[in-house]
Structure formats: C-alpha cells, structure tokens
Length: 456
Image (cartoon, rainbow, N blue to C red; front, side, top):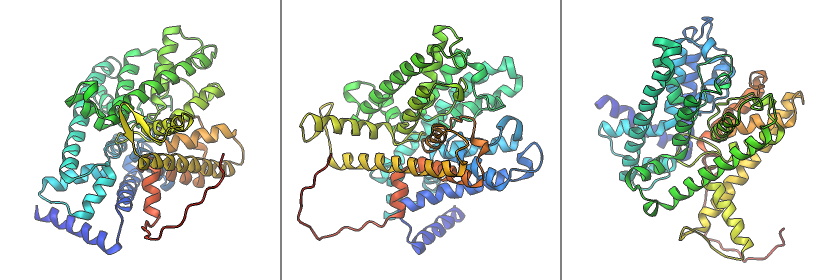
C-alpha cells in the first residue's frame, strides 16, 4: 500500500509542478493509454506476421480502440494474434469506462483521499459534484458494466458455440465489451462487420441492446435501477430517453424508406429483415460502428442521415461520443423557445438555465467547426480522389467515435491518419474539455456597457 501511495504522491507532485488544469490531466490520461497501447501493438507478438504494426498504424488503432471508435487500418481477426486482440480488448474496456474512472477507484480502494485539485479533475471527468457522489457513481459504473457485459458475454457465447466451438468464449466476451463500449470492433474478419450476418436477428438484438445500454449513460441506467418510475426520473433521464427513442425511430424510418429499393444494401431482403437492418443501423450509427450492409453502396440520403446521427451521438457519461443527444435537445428547444417568443426553456415542468443553453450552443458550434476544418484538411490530403461526402462521413465517424468505415480508412497516408487520430481523441474526451485544456480562463471584474447589434 505504501508503494501505491508513493506513486500517487509522485503524480500529485507532477501535476503541481506543471500546474496542470483538470481538463489537461484528463487529456494526458488518454494520451498515456494510447501511447501504451501503441507500444504493445508494435511488438512482434501482437501480429500474425511477427513484425508488429508500424508506428503510425499502431498509433491509429490504439487511438481508435482507446477512444472506442472502431475505425481501423488492420483486420483484427486476420492481422492480430491473441495477444494483440487482448490488448485491443483492454484498450476498449478502459477507454469505454474512462481511465480516470478506473484510476480513481484503484487509489480510493488503497486508502487515498482526494484533495481539492484532484476533486476538480474528477468532477470534470464525470460531470459530478462532491467526492461522495463521485465515488458512489464510479462504483455503480463499474458494477453495471460488469453485470451487463458479463450477462451478454454468456448469452453471445452460447449463440456462437455451434459456429466457433471453444473459441465462442472469446468471441462472446470481445463482442459484448466492444458493443457495450460502443467501439464497433469485431472478430469476423475481412472488414465485413455484420454484413454477412444481416439475417441473424438474435445477434443484432443482443448487439443493439448493448449499444443502447452503453450509449444511454450510467446515470440513466442508475435511475432505471433505483427509481424505476417515470415521475421519479431526473430531467436528464427523461430527455435522454425521449431523444433516444426519437432518433432511433426517425433514423429507422429514413433508412428503411430510402434503401427499400436498393438491391446493393437491403433491397433484396424481406420487409421484416429490411426493418430490422434499418433499425440496427439507426442504433449503431449513433456511436457504435457495427454495420449490416455495405455503406459505400448506400444512397446519399442514407449517408447524410447517418452523418447527422453520428454527429449527435450518445448521451453524456456514456461510452459513446458525438456532441451528445442532450446537447442537441437543448439547442432544438432553445430555438423553439425563441420562435414562441418565450424567454426560458421549460421541459417536463423544469427550467433549463441559460448557462446550460450557452454551453450547448458552444459545443455544437465548436463541433461543427472541427468537422469542417478537419474535413477540409482531409480532402486536401486526399487530393480529391474521393467524393467530399465520403470524406465528411469518415471525419464525422471519427469525431462521433462511431467508426463506421466507408471503405477508405486504410487508404489514408500518414497525415490523414494523424488528423483522424486527433479527431477521435477530441471526440472521445469532448470538444469542450479539449478547448478548455487549451484556453486560459480568467474572470474580469470590468463590466462594459451593452449595445445592440443586428443579427439574422
């Protein structure tokens, strides 16, 4: 125990010496995990050719796994050994839960008590106030994760036994963790994801349920477990549930309607199968990355629908990315409030503060700017070899930590992979956290006189 506390003390001295802000510590924790994964994937033991991955490929894959994205330049099934696959699994699990979450529980269990600056780091990471609440939330996060992943790992193992035999255990565990963490990595090989299994309704139901649970957020799961009644749910839970249902239904309808006559995607399937695939795609493209048909063959309207869903993403404090469904909800309600001539946003009998509204617009704006700038840079790097909508799809897929490949991920050069690597990191930690880590915040006592300007 004394040895562990000594390491904690070293970390605290390091933080004070460099005067790191909470947001910077969060970013550095992910960077450390990514670099560790990069080193492990470069080892000869990690790949089937006994050469290890190149530095840029290892960095890209490690970032994709740590940020639970799913974009990959290697075939996990064919290119990685059992060791490399286990490294990927651990990166996905730690990245999905958040390295700060796991590290906090470890040092807390060995008897360490957090000081003010460390509490600020945890509050920023978990969006919670108070050490007691944070520790209790972390306990619940770990408990819910183990229970959900364990249950579905057992179910999927039984489902895979007829096909894979003894290997079914590994397949069940890997896909349970990958789906719940909204990572989108699979072990079926040849970059096919679930395309050759689009008639396996049981598998799609299990994977889809895991994606929804992981993307809903741990605070919402806690509400369902402890409060159980709609009237007792927090406003956050109600908004997440409503947005999840609305986005899944709208996405399902649009994808089904557009792809109904497309023989290259789901057009040749029966109507129930088309609905099942459309629903699964609507769920998965929010932030998971599993796909049941060739996305390159999808209609442009379908690709645009998926881009929008990927950009919105999952709920806060979940394993998913994007600007978050609650952010999008606040923006929509804010516009509706303006149109109605009201001054306050009122939802389910509760008022949403101006601070939250401003934060939502800031996140939306910064996310949009990042997508535009990264898309332009990637298009320049690409040399306009691919259509702009394909490049934008790839960019949003990385930012939303979705990882739905449209067939060009492995074609990027070193600079393209670096841009996507940074985009995945920003999408995982959150654009607001990333910007706050770079910008120095100072309160000013000076108040300037207001003056109106014309807008719109």
